[in-house]
Length: 451
Image 1 (cartoon, rainbow, N blue to C red):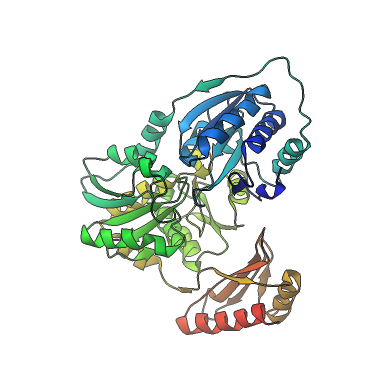
Image 2: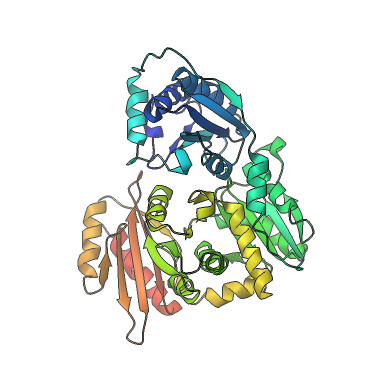
C-alpha cells in the first residue's frame, strides 16, 4: 500500500496508482477494527472510481464485523449529520473533495462527527491497514441502504428566516456534490429563486475545478450573477463542505469576512456564545464577533483542530479562511448550505445587500495566503522570530507576530505556517493601510525566499 495517501486530516490519492481497490479493502478492515463499531455510515461522491472503491471499502468494513449504513451519493455535511444518529459509531465520506476526478479519498470520523486525523486515530488505521494482519471474526456485517437526506434537508432548511423578502441567487455546484444540497433551497421557494449553473451529476466534474478558494473558478458565477441581476452567488467545492460567495455586483467575498457576517445571526440564536476564527482571519472578524456580543477566540488551521476546540469551548460557530464553516447544529462540523441560509437571513433581517454587509466588516488590507517553496523551513522560521522579536509572538500554529497600534487595536500582523506535505511556507498578513500591507509583504517575502 502506498502510505503517502495518509494525510494529516484524511486519506487522499490518485486512482488507481496510489489508492486502489486493494487499499480500499484494507482501509475498510482497519476502520472496523480501530472503531470496534457495530454501525459505520458511508456516503460517496460521484467520481468514476467511487463505485469500485465503495464496494471494496464496504467489503472490508463488513468483513471486519461492522454494518455499513449506505447513504449512497452524499455530501460530506450529510455524512457528518448522519454520524450523529444513535447507534452509529463512525462514518466515512468517500471523496477527494476539490481534487480532480482522477483522485479519490476518505474522510473518517468517530461517532458524532468527531474527526479521525493524524493525531486522533488515522495513524492507527494506517498501521492496521498496511500490516494487513486483521482479526478473525465469527460474524460479518451487512450493507444496509439508509436514507437520511430528507431529514438533513428539513433540518438545515428549518433555519430559513427570510420574512417577506424575495431573493434571486445563482448556485454553481461544479457538477459535483453540491447539486444534492439544492433541495434545501426548495424549502424557501416562496422567497428564493435559484438560477443553476453546473448542477448536473450526469456530467460530473466536467467543468471548472470544484474549488471556490481558487478565484478563477468563480469567473462564470460572477458573470452570471450580474447578468441575472441576482442578489448573490454561491459556489460549492467538490464534496460541498466548503462554500464561496459572490455579492450582487459580481465581487468575490473574502471567506473570513463571511465568518464576521455569520456571527450576527448565530449570536441571536446563541447569545454570548464562543465563536472561533482561524488565526489567518482579518482583525475585523474578532471585532465583529465582539460587537455582536460573542466571545471571539482564535484557533489553529485544519478541521480536526477546529472541531476539537469547538467541543472544548462549546462554540456555536467557527470559520476558516478556506471557506469551511462549522456549526454546533451539525455536530460541530461543516454545513456549507447553513452558512448560505444564515447569510441570507442576515440580509433579510437588516434589509441590506450582501455588498453592504461586506463593506461594514471590510476595514483592513489583507494579503491573502501566499505560498513560497523553501529549502530549510526551521531555519527560516527562526530567522523570522529573531527579526520580529519586538512584536507580540504567538506559536499557536506556526508563528504569528502582531504589532499594536498606539491609537488602539493592532497595526499589522503576519502568520507563517509550514505545509504538512511539502517544503512550503504559507504567509498571511494584514495591516491598517494598504501601503503598510504591501511594504511588509515585500519585506517578509524577501526574508522567506532569499537563499
